Image (cartoon, rainbow, N blue to C red; front, top):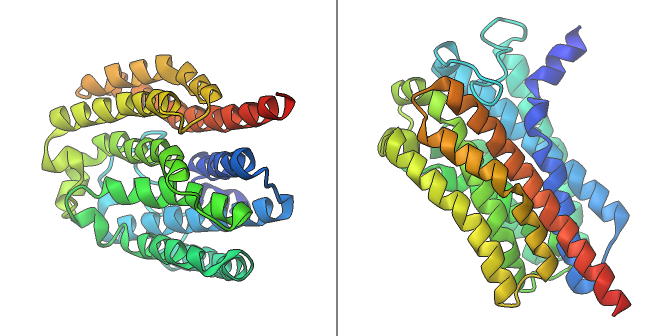
Length: 302
């Protein structure tokens, strides 16, 4: 039973993102460089997973200490794990779990800086800053969602690419990583809607607070559409392979998410929108990765 509680504290439903990101970043590297080191891919995945666990757990700790978790209306996609408010674990235990996860990720990062190159170090340092400052500091600045999009969207794609190739291959990899940044930004944005009142009391300045939910829903909608336009534009400009268009298959989920976001006043519409948003975030990146693999396979046959 204790193991199950610790597992729930990790918020495993969100950790799927740490599977999709390595797949996409590694797929891009294989397409451009025909480079694939399975050991590096798996070790880097473990490092990202540990970092993601650290973010989730420390967020839970700081939210409990600030009192947010005692006032939020939990949904399957927001409101924390719920472990601390009901006393299943002590705050100190949760804090040390988050810190331990972060510390375990450090040797993995050092290893890749040594074997892949020093150019990876700035990326890792920025990610480390985001892990510790996101909940206690960044969330109290205007428009904090950009940090999540960058730290758990764009940067991991660049990192996994660099680990496989030892290069960033600008600008094509940056262009390929932008959809991930937008998608993760929107994952946080829509999940913040149910927590607005509790977040406001804690001094947070998320977009639903600073501009209101109505305008924030428009921002969410515009950015969601931008993901698909970006992919189409990348293909037309020759910066992304044509098979990337397979990611457009998630458009029906995106439309449902946008429709629900526009009806954010109704929880019966908002929660399904959040579910569709999760599908958009995960499946779009998964399909992009498959698109890069298909492009690489067909180019080898041509």
